[in-house]
Length: 282
Image (tube, rainbow, N blue to C red; front, side, top):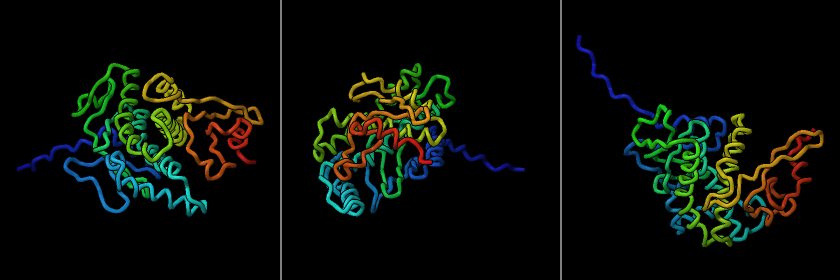
């Protein structure tokens, strides 16, 4: 009997499982890896990261979403630099997860240049191509196309920072004319996006403590162009419980809309107020 020819096996991306796990614990973000030859999506709501980096009409449209949200939710106009800060945060937070989540879960660090990422902010949907990734020598994926083996954990941490900088650097330049911030302040924002995004997702994964330790090793405060450390510290609650917090390297400017309602990690928020916010209501 003649047997049918076997079809070649389809190899999933080495970071696909990490993105699937991300969406499982946080459905608000979905990262979809495009197949070879598949076009990036377009149409209303979609923007390429390279378009944000260009800083033109696509960025105007992107920021109009934030301006309208501020008018709707707070009944006032936001300053242009505040709107730009909100927009940058709402892109950079999920974009950093494209790199940090595969590193945290599987010790694989994809390269995601701006030309290879698109974003639909209303849906929290990112698409990307993964042409290259770094991994450790004992990784089963080390022999796959696009794999680049590095020596050890320290080298892999360097890959994380390089991959995020490769992606966010052009985006920061696209936003910079809209913001009253210098280059150092913008990279302080990048530091915060790396830390707070993974910290939040790791909490959902039940691995907050490990994430804090690994982020402290990732960002010791001496790696340019990033500014500041992971910034973690502990406060003591009213019953002696430990309350993890951190000090942001930058400010999101939300205080310009609600001065009385600062973020719990904001440099403007005193420890007494942090304890109050972090202590569950009985």
